[in-house]
Image 1 (tube, rainbow, N blue to C red):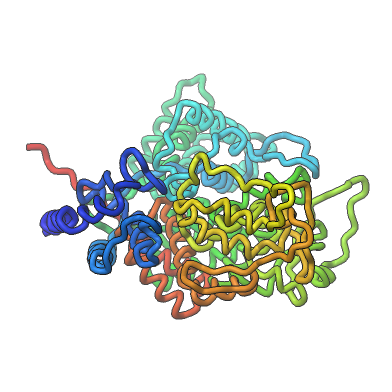
Image 2: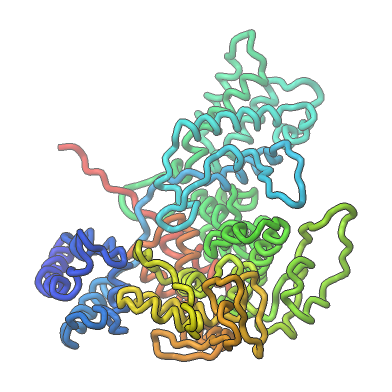
Length: 637
């Protein structure tokens, strides 16, 4: 039945769709000319067609908007457009059935590995350095030594499926394991060891060794171990050579556990049967814990997994609520939101590290507030709450008077101070994520700002600009044009305009904020500043923040744009939030069979004005989070 369905789809594609692509699209989207990084000439079989569902989604949107093929090119008739859209609807929407992804082992990311070691041993492996307020320094020995995880296809660093285990990383694992075990057995750290074996009255002996193995090994491997496996480890310790101390024998066995694939990878010890199956409760505990905390399951999750009750809907919801109240839930903001919103780009703003740190922390604190205090999803766009400290208070007018008094430490010129929560009563131009100083400062100019909003908030994927696109030329002598007017001339290329029609309105709406993120008043005019390519480069011209979205909706300023994002564009914003969160939770790029799950979550959250807690509940209860598909291996003939 499945094979017939795919062949039928392939026949329909070859007969109905491919001739239209050849007629209208392949001229610009082929092996030699991949405009917009799209190549329609590569689709030869059902698997290739399915894998490119995001491309088809974008193509369908372009057909509906009638901005592709571009103006001046041969255009399909209404019947031909409808034929393609009908095929798309049938192939990628109506006929898609929700299904979990195939199981693939995934190595712990560097952040997850650091957190897991800390939870396992009870202490952080730190670098011995002298910190200064004016400089950025990494204090984690793990993150200092391990290479950065490159983002996977999902765009997130916990998507490590394609991140190979190199000899360099293996050597670093070995060094870090030896160092952690050395610290664990150090006399001054005895209380960490006693947390596993109880009070030590004398030297570490075989009785304590057995107790340590029976408690440490299941925690490290994040599930109970068979008695035979534990007994084998204990037996090797007891049969050690006479010249080997008990402590050294235990270290060797613990290192073997910490260097094993079962520790470094997730899901390898889950019992698997061919085909689709629910994950067991211990795998479910791992998925939940690494999603919300970036860390191994705690005792509560482990006990629920042992009792077989973790998979109950009400139990799972209560665990999400409990975990969001924990300080460890800050991981959602410091890792998930940090990557989603590309907050790391703030570090390229100037050389004032405490100010950079303040700007980054403001975004993180705001996202932590949304995630853990049950705030509506759409409050990402506009909110009456923000977080400020003395270094960024100047951006908040009279509202900065809500800050508690602060006295700078003696001898320190500039220092980072934790943020305080404030209510935006006067600085209404600052509500939400889009107008935070750090977001504006890291995205200078309308193109970067518009692109950031389009990709990070609305979820549109843009191709790289042409290599020879160039920059907006400076005004010529005697020319009295604003940057926006010069930009219109610059983007006259029809191919460029297809993206800029989406980018520019969003970017120009933010032009009342300068390169440092400061707000330029409503009645102000702009002046020349060192000839930079921005509206700030034309003397005496009023700043034009009006715009028109591809949907035809217009706005006059940033507040008008926010209103559209929170109303008519609301569903698109919610869909992006859902897709980003689900992809991060699953540690992989979403596939076509995830679409029904996403659609249902978006429907429910949109209709109910859902909160981030509702979203997290929906993610952990979803089919792809709770189930997996194991490859079916045919027996040899």
